Length: 156
Ligand SMILES: CC(C)(COP(=O)(O)OP(=O)(O)OC[C@H]1O[C@@H](n2cnc3c(N)ncnc32)[C@H](O)[C@@H]1OP(=O)(O)O)[C@@H](O)C(=O)NCCC(=O)NCCS
Image (cartoon, rainbow, N blue to C red; front, side, top):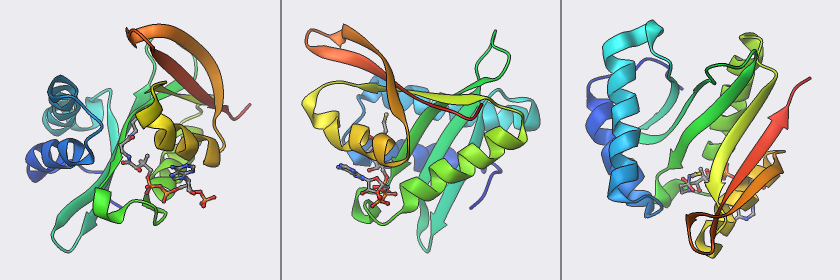
């Protein structure tokens, strides 16, 4: 697993996030903007990454960071695994790497926003399998009948 952002990640994250079929084009743009931020600012960026490369390039990544105006809360902003490689433990390994880094940095908990609509059931199942619990739910947040669901894992 790699933490440093490379120039090629900008295009690769666009391709990867779009390929999952889970994100709208405007969401993909935001995922790419965070990678560009990491690329241009390096260690001073608010965003940190783990990248998993395969033989043909990027196959998965996670983006996370400290939540501004909190003492020790962190957000997992993005996680995506190549659809052809999902269900093989890559997502779990990324989450474990993020958790280890957050703990190393003194983080007290990780929060992740996801959607409540039916097609996100696999994603919610993934977070629960990784030990995250539903901490909040905002009905109709993204759209009518599409809640925002916040999952959390606290370390202290
Ligand atoms: C969600 C995602 C990152 C998970 O990555 P992954 O590599 O497929 O997941 P893993 O193989 O590491 O699975 C880890 C655990 O989650 C569980 N899990 C995965 N999919 C699940 C599902 N549909 N229902 C219940 N549990 C599930 C696995 O069973 C596994 O648990 P186990 O180790 O106890 O067997 C990946 O599927 C993905 O990129 N999805 C599309 C994008 C997305 O939804 N991103 C998050 C947006 S908020």
